[in-house]
Amino acid sequence: MTSGRPAAAPSTPLILGIGLTATAGIGLGMVAYGRSVAAQRFRLRHHEIEVLPAGSPPLRILHVSDIHYVPGQRHKARWLRSLAETDPDLVVNTGDNLAYPESVPEVLEALEPLRRFPGVFVPGSNDYYIARRRNPLAYLWRPSRLAADPPQLPWRSFFAHLTDSGWSDLTNRSLQMTVGGRPVQLSGVDDPHIGRDRFAGWPADAAQGDALRIGVAHAPMGRVLSQFSDTGADLVLAGHTHGGQVCLPGEVALTTNCDLPRRQAKGVSTVTAGDGRSVALHVSAGVGTVVRAPFRLNCPPEACVIDLVPARAGNALLHL
Image 1 (cartoon, one colour):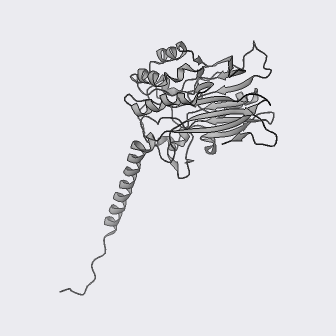
Image 2: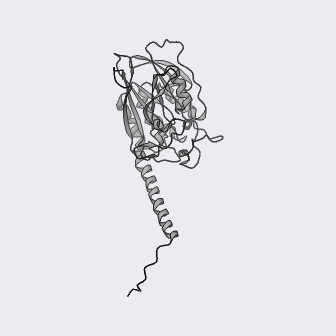
Image 3: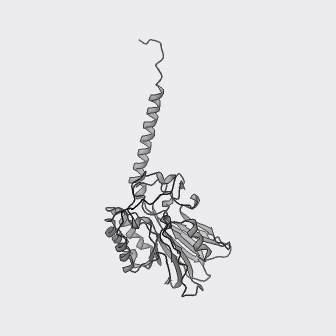
């Protein structure tokens, strides 16, 4: 028998508690997915950029960045090794390879097949220092900062292994080399995100002529992009942003962790030089994650094959 009176409505605190519990459950589920699934779905992206003179043979660059290797990440290591199948003319590594001192031998092993190709590299802060503990999502509202007196990584021995295998260190340096049968001038800077960049210009002992000019940096800070583009760069390569790492659906970045506009958080875009030229910019979304926030959402980890080709009349500079 019923009393005929309606059941009491749930109290506001109860409803709020249920809502918060459900929201927390969804959030934890997304974090778990971003860590165990999304952060392991490596992809190889392809771009074509028209920057070579007419009649030039194509030139293939493999751009690898932000590995942030944690010891034991064997799936990541196997995927990195497989990138040698792209058969690049040049490998460009834009830094943040390490996470812990113990990462060095496994990273070198993972990169070993790629070190058989001509290559260049610049450092990121996480090649020098172990990332500090902080709110893992704090980078969404302000750029990350270097801690006072951070513990160092064994960067000197790591860089020495890379150069011993034939890769060139572009840390605040420039050089000219022959890549794919054509002269290429490269200029690199140390990590602008922590203020170590010193632009070295372009090789002074070689006439530019038909040489392709490529600028290389870890963080695509505005001042560095201007230095490269205003002095004649044809292409600039950078990493650091992780493509936003945690993105809205459609891979819409919430942050670049620097002063680069969010619409340029990853992929190919352009920057405007002082003389009005459009200079191609490629920003890699990176292979790894922030060590203290090891998950991705709507932003798969990646490496990129960039095929440089001659300009075709009436066509755009970039082909995605």
